[in-house]
Image 1 (cartoon, rainbow, N blue to C red):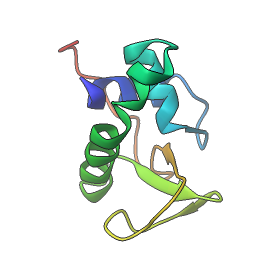
Image 2: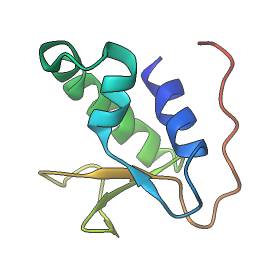
Image 3: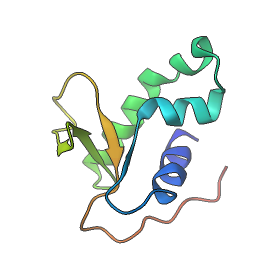
Image 4: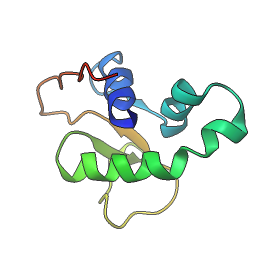
Length: 91
């Protein structure tokens, strides 16, 4: 479910644009911070897996970071050289 939401949000963006991981969490859990903040750790784990698979880029200050070792604030974006990723219909 997290993967699907991430891909849907990225597909809705213009090429080269990114999303905040909290945007994906709020899409699933609503605006109550206690609810969406619980999704942040699992969302990061899914984003790291997706980045390692080449499905997306994790960025910091608009520069791609190593998904295995970076710390701190990040954003998610589709890879610049990749064709559009189809959004799974399993939602």
